[in-house]
Image 1 (cartoon, one colour):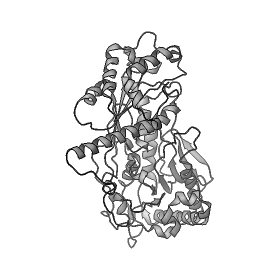
Image 2 (cartoon, rainbow, N blue to C red):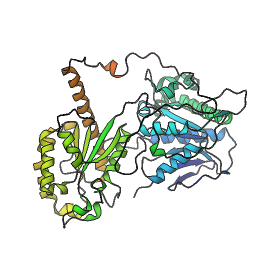
Image 3 (tube, rainbow, N blue to C red):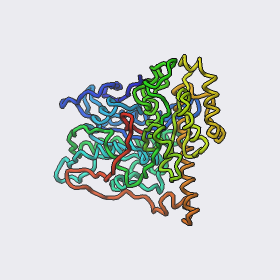
Length: 470
């Protein structure tokens, strides 16, 4: 089982890792800042490094700089960041606790950030706490110190971000033009990076000392809306599972890989006992989707209908379930229809003794049933026809499959507009027309409260906890 990695950097330099949400002692020092960032998914190539390495490096440098500017006592937390994307109760409670206690919220601006449901939930949760100036003569601030992780150019910010009064040029011209990621990666900008980190740390300390943001009541993180509703469209991904309930299994199949619901299928045990659909949901959220989980049997008639599809889809197919003749015919009908906006992934655990024993006949059964889906896969998206043997294989394949479905769904929508006589949208229109130069606004909230955007109901899932970044 995987556990959540939650890191505090303390004055002594110790990285404290928590697997238990615990509580917050009122006598315990609060972290100066909460670093909020969009988790970048791992590249599909095997052996690729951690794409979030540079965020972790920034976090370490920022903690050191804040420490030099303060008189924090031994053992006091300097900062906080979530270094995992794992779901579950412990993860959500710890994140909620930190958002209710941190002194400053530091979001790393990037297009991925503003398309992340989890980042929008973090922003929203923090802004539910009231903020007061330290002195009556002080100018009130929001308690948010934004950072340009990448250069944003004319990117249209959501309302809650554009309202912040913040001058990024004060961190240096190279930072404002390139963003911190470029300054870190290129040795040419080393001095500019050190200047930007120093000024960012000073700004964090100044905001912490100039404002009073009381400890809040921890919220149910996974049920919170996103603060970015005004900008990000709802990008659904309907994840459907074709598998067995434990009660439906053939006699020779090991029940350890199944649960009371078909969506409980977890083929990669003992590597992971979490339902595969929850892994898929976590990865989909990293890609900016608002995913939901369903049984394939309940989805197939809608997919095969003549109605316009509501969203791209992803089918997680258990080859063992193809042995049910009636249900296999349902999959064959789906394959003959071959909706391009629905991708199929076939996990096949080669560490599972049953799968090893029945590998050839079930592979042939799958190939016979999924003729069209196998044939139509483009080379750049081609999955291993033998199946996804490990959880890592599955995690590498899912982003490609989800994006393939998304592109096909968008192509269908565009072609439908052209057929109906509507003009074909231009690239410029797709990105919001002709926006002017980006200038942070001067919007203010009511005294004693922080700005928060209105957001309608979030994604729904039929399979336990959701949430999580990215």
